[in-house]
Image (cartoon, rainbow, N blue to C red; front, side):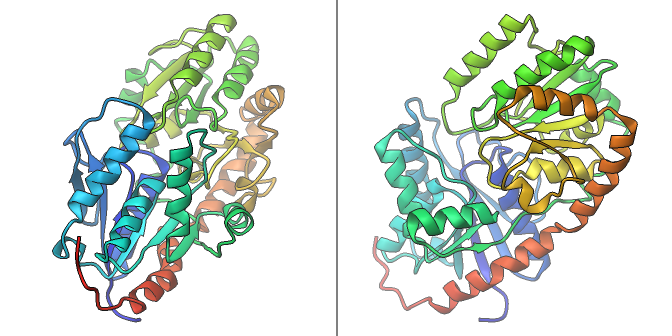
Length: 393
């Protein structure tokens, strides 16, 4: 099917998480290609998305929820079902879920005959101990008409564990938003977080097990023995999942290491950071430290490289799918000593002279336009398959 498509992209929240960043950038790139893509997400705060977008956005009415992760996910699925409860609200050529939450809402809308099917991007698959969360995750994959993923490793998992075919669409980076060029507000941003002479290291994703925060903290404690003025910024952390127990373990590890955690101290937790602030943090950092244990792609790797910041990351997929040994410092994420050595190596002028231009080369291979174009076959297949629907709730 050729021509202009009307596409509803559904994300899990309006917060700055990788899947939401991807959804907004994808919507913008699709609009630049001549399609009409609007990004939806439940918005219990009423504040809208974490950044302005160059595509239509819909902040779906949602209520604050106190309770378990199951309670929260169920509520957000219901928010979507209320929003798309009528045929008029479902007047799109293609529906595209970016998460298990939106995938479940779209699966239900399909069974209610309000939509003909949906495309689903699988960024990564979690190991849920709660059986209902696990069933919801599976349903959001198995009920999709077309599956996409951001890296080949997850394509293999979908084939092996679900018997499902998928296409790899990859990721991109906005080189207008993320640039090595300094901004007058950079110094103000550094001051607001209490950053000193450094060295300064940046971790992105908050205090989460799959982000390997404990390994990063252990490495930083060893690194700081030789660099007593070093600071580690831990940016982000907005999540639907409950990471309180893991954060407590991180606090205990910092106490045992004698490292303070607050603005201006050795470890600086920022919480969610507006996108407009992130480039300043990347530029101020001597390196991005991102030895993640489980990742869909690792968008922050491209963002750091676009800002001229060397990257330390894991020596395994998905990172090794798009990074060579000369592009980043690749380490065993299970070895804090190796991570600490990479932290030290990232300060070496010769290493930096190699990594920074290599990073620019990686960035040039990942425009959002290319990522958006890779979506079009799946969209066209779903739009072609659109039947006449007997609408009923």
